[in-house]
Structures are given as C-alpha cells and as structure tokens.
Length: 487
Image (cartoon, rainbow, N blue to C red; front, top):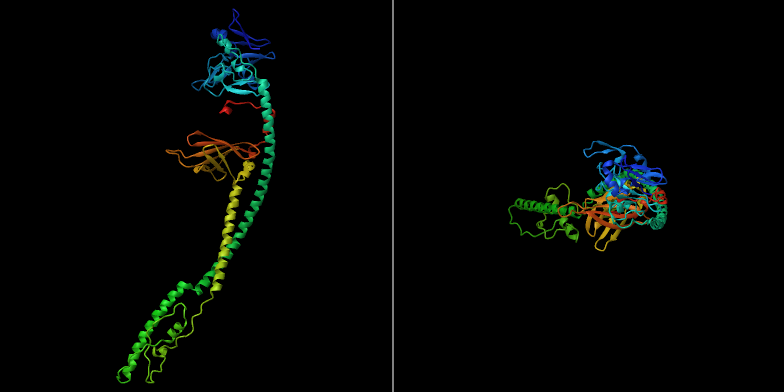
C-alpha cells in the first residue's frame, strides 16, 4: 500500500504507511506533499519501506537517515539529507536523488524501476513517470498521477498477469531456439578446432616441401636454358641465315676478283663472257627445298673451259678447308620441348604450394578462439532483399547494397558484433560502412538492415555463434527490460 500523508502540528510533513515505515519530507515541500503523495518517495511492501523507482537490490543505498551523495552541477561532491529523496526537486544532475519522480527528466543515468510482479521487470526513463501514460504493467509509474492532477482518470490497471503469460511463451520459444543454437554452435566449434589442427599441419608440411620444389624448379630451368642455347629456335635461325647470305655474297665478289687476276696471268686474252655458276654451298641450299635459309638466284663463278680452271671455289678463294656440303644439325626440337614442359610443371608446383599455403594461413587467421562459433560463416555469403535493395554480406570479404560497396571486412568489434568499413563514398562523404549485430539463432539469416545515420548501415544477423550457455539462466529468470531495447 502506498504511503498516506499525515500532518502533525509540531513536526514537518510525515508520510506514514501501513506497517512500520515512516517517510519524512522537507518542510518546504509540504504543499507539494498534499498534491502528490505517491511521488514523495516511499511505498510499503510486506511491512517494510521501499523507495519508489529503485530496484530491490538497490534499496540498501537509501537506508532511512543516510545522507545522499552525488556530483553537483559544478562537478564537486554534493551531500544531501535523506529527506531530499524523491522530493520532486532535482538536486543531482544525474538524478540520484529523484529515482521515483520526473524531476530529473532528460538524463539516462538514473532510471525508474518497475517491479512488474508476475511479469518481466523493466526500467523506464524518469520522464515517463506520472505523465499520464501507463508504461509499467503494474501501474507503479503512474501511482501519483491522480493525486497530482485533480479529476485525472483512474489508476493504471495491473496487466502483469496477462503480460507474464505472453513473456513465458516467448521465453519457451527462445529457450528452444537457444538450445538448438548451442548444439549447432558446439558442432561448428568442433569442426573449427579439427580444421585448425589439419590446416596447421598442412601449412607446416607445405613450407617444408617448398625448398625441394624450388630446387627442382631451378634445375629444370638450367636444363631448359641449356637446351635453348643449342636449339636457337626459328627467329635465331633466320638471323643466322641472313648472316650466311652476306658471307656468300662477299665470297662471290672475292671469287670474281680472283677470276679476273687469272685471266690476266693467261696473257691478256679476252675474257670469255661470264656465265652464272652456283657454288657448292648454294647448290646444297637450292637442293634443300623448303629448308629455312635456302638462297635463290645467286651470282655464280664463271666456268673455266681452258682446262686451267680446275681449282675449286674454295681453293680459288685461298681457303684452307673446303666448305662443307652437309647441313648444320641442331639439337632435336622434341628434347627442348620436353625440357620446357618439365620447367612449366616444376614452376606450377611451386606456385600451387605458395598459393595454398597463403590461403590456409588466411583461413587460420579467421579461427580466433573468441569467435570459433562463427567459423561456419567464413567464405559464405548471405543476402536480404528489403523490397528496394538486395544486401549481400560475404564474411571476411565484402558487403554490398546491390552493386554499391558498403565496405570490406573490417574485423570483429565485440563478442557479438563486427563491421565492414571503407565502402563507396557517399556524395560529400562519409565512406559507407556496415555494422553487424549477431543474435542467437539456429541458422545464419539477415533479419533486417537499417541506416541509423547517413551512410552508416546496421544489420542484425542470427547465428549459432551468438548463442551462449549463460543465456539459459537469463531465460529461466525473467531478464530486466531496458528502455534502450525499444530502439
């Protein structure tokens, strides 16, 4: 039962309650006491005084006669008499002295506690106390409204029994989801631990194999280089043929000069008309058909018909050895191709080893102990269409709104939160980003996406990783509702 005022002649205003509690208020507030009894601070339960708006576990802070301490407006410590409690006058900027009135509305340090027996206890902002709107299902937030306003409507009905039944059903559903999520979470953690052990071993093995693979690659490269030095290839052969052409033309000019000298030695006889002849090397080249380097239409040496021109072309040129009429034989193309193939295979093995090692190390970085329960999201993409845009979240990679980047994976920001940062710039800034808040669920689902501030997005995602064993106790005992949960 709430306190009823009694005004003794020789004492200040005293509020007495059924049972053993007595609440005093300051003499200066006597008129206010007459107008609003319930707002003054005390109501009785089971014969004991309870300070209005204070949770049961906080009642000991306001023992009768104990001074109230807080930080004043100037930041200096402020000490108030017990009678200043809930006197509808805000002495402490943080509302410490007015937990049960709206005198210190506008701050969020001190909140009004609703017991809500039979339902879920909750906290509300003190600005909602005695404002004519029933926020607490037990009506305790509007207990002084009628006394403060003559002719006001009847007190708030107690709806806690009905709300308690609804809360109970919701808790049963949440408990079933929690237990299912915890089971999946444990499976995910077990798989993550096994994968981490496997990948760690694979990385060690591949790092040990890499020097051998690199050595094999280096040997294959030496063999390929050696083969290339012997087998020059089409381009180099073409250049070689051009040099041979120049050499032959030079030799032909020298032979012509020698022929003229021979004619002079014969006594100055008129030289016969020259006819074209073909050198032995050119004859071979002509006979080579389509062989690269064959030379057509060469100028030849004149034929010696007088029997004294029996010198070969090479002898006439004064060469110590005749030109070979056999083609130059290079190393087989098949052998070089085999060396090249061996080099390509060796390089591929080294590259594969390095890429796989890098991939596994990156995956291991994602398996930190604090977030093993979320490892099933690694490399996965989940999406949500909100009726206007399609949002796609690829964990440890990027997030997009249709084709607009909301950011790259920026890492974890808490046990149940992460973010994507440095997305596409908004006109005039800032860069887009996406905050992710995880909630307990048996599946990974995007619940919804909002934009609480310009280009700063927020999404709620269910995941077994967000299911925690300690949540079982919270559901078994009704949790305290907070006004921020309404946002």
